[in-house]
Amino acid sequence: MKAGSVLMVHCSLSSLGHVIGGADTVVTALLETIAPSGTLVAMTGWDHDPYHLNEWPEQRREAYRRDPPLFDPDLSEAVREYGRLAERIRTWRGAHHSSHPEARFSAIGRRAPWITDNQPWDHPGGPGSPLAKLVEADGSVLMLGAPLNTLTVLHHAEELAEVPNKIEVTYSVPVRAAGTVEWRDVHDIDTSKGAFPYEKVVCDRDAFEVIAEEALASGIGVVGNVGASTSHVFPAEDLVHFAVAWMEKHFS
Image (cartoon, rainbow, N blue to C red):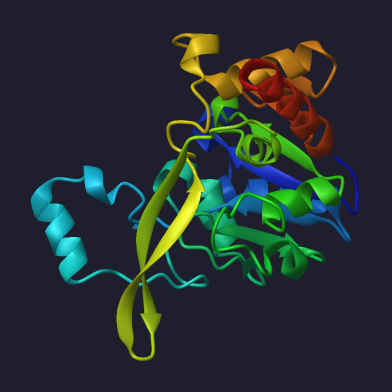
């Protein structure tokens, strides 16, 4: 990480141990590290997105369809599983947000408008996405105590890999249109269970964790301790290129 860089962060705040000031302290420290012209990025999503709507209990599913919440890029709460830091970045003064209700990204800093603008509706992690721009900007990914299986940038590698028969999904999202609510389809790779049959290669392990560990073993990325955590930094472009080659090797 250096001044002026684009840095995407995943953070498990609890793994760091006690941090005086909590998420505020961590965001401030990261912004100071990449100051004055850097950009801090996090995937924030939407805690009430209907990606898994068809798997919900019937009563909950019907209630959602009857009176659905509507996504607001600036106001809607981040996915809670993404941790306190993602929500803190979303609510930081001057933060910019992409407009996709399931794959929203939030960013702070000089290149935040560019990172978050014009995210594709279909395949929101593919070309033109915030992840693609992270790679284009020669950015880095910081796993601040976060597990390697949460390396979101590897979904961009799944999009780029030239592999036939990727596993794809279609789900519907309620959007406001002309004063009414309509359900609009989203077409994407399966970012929940995987775009490929990973279990044939990694058995019961998480594929993203395996890819990250093999990338580290090849010299891509570094590992170190931050507080009580084990943390990692990866150059986004090198990691994505490694992952694309790994996926094409195993699934082409």
